[in-house]
Image 1 (cartoon, rainbow, N blue to C red):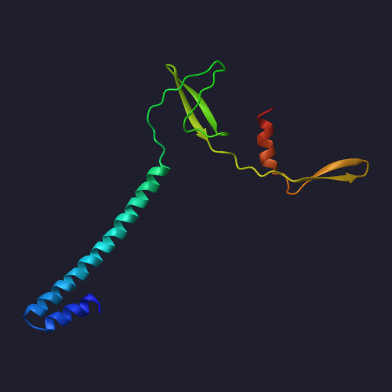
Image 2: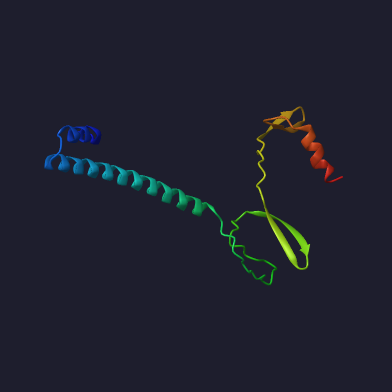
Length: 138
């Protein structure tokens, strides 16, 4: 029997100790249901808070020392990370983490064409990209 049906049954009984007990039972059921909902809400809130905290990087001041080969160890850096280094004057150095380049490796197969061996790509070369790459060297 749900709490609404129990509440209606208690009201139908009229005044007396039996009705008081039924109303107390109904209130108890409502309270338990509210507590259960509250537990779910709090558990969900805590889970989201922990996940959010785990994703954030702590940005507290860090002092690092260069070794004899002018290397420093950055606590948040992972192997293979690349950084843009800018000298900001007054002895300040600004490091900006660079996103890894998304490049597809070309699959090349060697074919014999007449007297020559020729490399053939699996996709055509983008002329505009080639011009931009060559412009850096000219």
